Image (cartoon, rainbow, N blue to C red; front, top):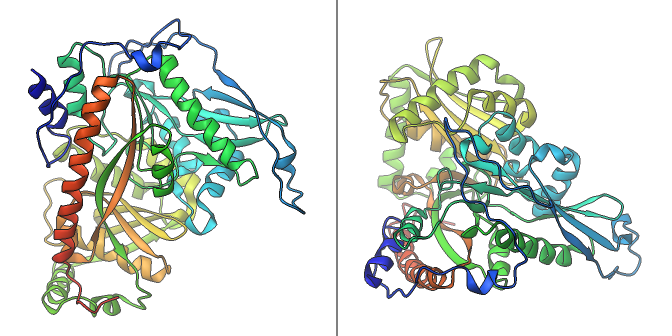
Length: 472
């Protein structure tokens, strides 16, 4: 039974499977719940056609905290006059002003590394369009910290989830292991950007002299909420590397994943980039790109106001075609694309392919401070255009990054085929706070083995790099 439970945790979570001893029993969360003053638990929430069950009513306050002043000499920042911090849970991002949320997001990353997915505009588009709401299994439970002047000093995008879809960090087998032992894995708490495997800060904090204190308070608040809700776990997916390191000190298990990113080594043109490639790889890319013109296709990059409502309606059809063929259901609604575009402006880049006057394919990208983020792709149903996917998603993105002088292109999750097109493997991170001690031990053991094997795979993949040995 023990070996079977360990295998259940490992299976399907990763291609790197192993064996582990497992001694979890049908226990409660004894270490974390024993001292918790809790009078309720959330049993389940549902999504899809079912009506979502409301969580038991509770005090949305997570406490008031004192901040110790440590202003540097000559610093007259008004925020640093505050002494108290109140932490609350809000059920919609609309309860926080866009200006205050975005100030936290911008300070967390820095202006040079602006992350469009963490903006109020993007996250509110997910909620307003019905894409990330309780009916779809994403119940917003964002954490907000305000000082005694009612200024927002920190926020965390957080959701109470009834499934593991749309996360890109796979834990379905962990849920199976819980259920095989008579325990509930869902609901769980998840700090992330829904449906978006993009690295960025998750604990968004204003740049004040209280920054470190606010960080500690917000992390403690997340853990307290996990215990208060009596859910199985708290997950923070695709955090920054800095957060990932800090959260280990707070008791979170660490997990490593892998994506493929393109790096801009001060290239002046696409041909400049190709000169860093090995001759065979350079030849293959040029041949793939030539196929576009021979099929009478025209590529265009549309930005901001250039993208009209008709483009989004057509792109939604492309998106639906992709999801119907790949996943079976679409996470995002038609309204999401219209809402997001109206709020994000020139941060949106839509690559389209035209055959004559007809749009036949498209790829959605968002532009950050130093990164072009490739997100979604689709084409006409039953249409097949050789190499068009590579052109729209990878080569057009590289050209755009060079044009905008961006540092890199993140082309989404998965896909070893990206390596031969200049996108090399890089690590991604996630953090997991597991309340049950037995499951925590076996998951911790699995993650250590998974990480070692993943690092080995990344070494092997780098050895098959398409770049010349002396390339930058």
